[in-house]
Length: 195
Ligand SMILES: [Zn+2]
Image: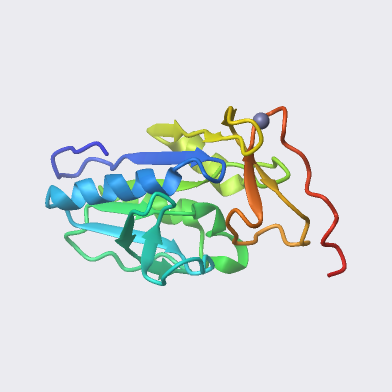
């Protein structure tokens, strides 16, 4: 996370994208902890929609975690907050978010806060999440992480759903999703239809 002297300058937007299992949350947590250790006042947010793991905690598959606020709207970020970290931002849209995340982040940047956002760039049909594409386009720094293909171990940029459940936004882990390379990505099987 870039650290610049506090002042009237616009904050920096850093965006982390990639498929599931790429270490996005681990990276976000590491950056948040580093900023915290440096004595900066931080806020860590995740969608209330994401009910995996403990409430009030962003956690990664490598075992790291950090306290957070579960949100469905932009929270009041009181001074002296300097940095905002947002995990799983692809979920902060539509019925899961009151307001416009892009506009809220722009306002925070204008107020001089640095913002780091992580999220999926595409869904399991390989369709971009519009909110993440917009954020990546506006980012001062964009870090795209790859996972390892669950089939062959090569770098993977896609998320595949193991079976169709009929829900596009569905929270799950490796019981439901896998990272796949270009060669091994497939649409989900229809095995779960009607269940
Ligand atoms: Zn593969």
